[in-house]
Length: 279
Image (tube, rainbow, N blue to C red; front, side):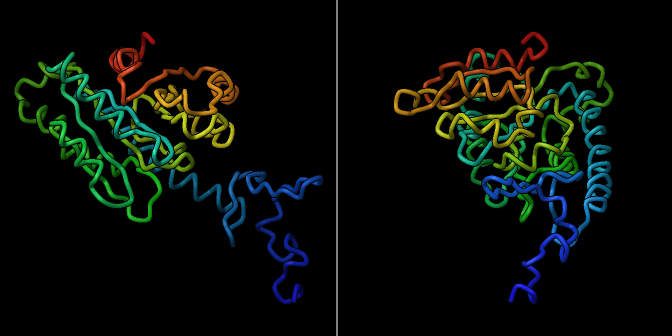
């Protein structure tokens, strides 16, 4: 049977898997050991690299246009990334309510990314903030083109263009755009959306080793928000170790502790959003 299916000599029969690293002691398989750092059945490492370069190259071109577009509208955009269930939407709702009380004149909007449903956008809209839902279907992340399309439908964009004769009056107006990415700690790490910063939100219910398990995401993030800190008394979560792991992956990553439920840490969180250059 092994001769028929090829499992007797996998690297000989399937040369695209020849790059897999095998731990001699445990037999563990590491499919990120090749030049492409990913394994795709039927695809060589060289082809995977070419395909990634083509796709990401076009995405990065659109992301650069997004970045210039945001700057022209006085918009600071943040890309919120995390696992499903980290509390991103709850934190966003709490942030919006906080800003309504402390900075009511600040324009803001949200682009919500999910595979299906408008549940999260509906929750955002219930706060009175503008939100556009982007459903990706089978996609596991937002890309720059999706964000460009969604932004064109938001008031942060329309308001500026409605006053073309006085555009300079609004050119430097401060406003915030939150991009809540699809819940996924893998794919969104490599996709530039034109944001000012990626913000990794990690719930303390997820375990302190997440930065080591998903290093690309934490390496790409400027800030790690440890959320749901109100639950710490009920958990076996090693906060110093989590921060140590994150800084092992990304020595420059900043860290904030927040509870969207109790409001603890929201002052520092909002201050960071409004003045990231001073953080």
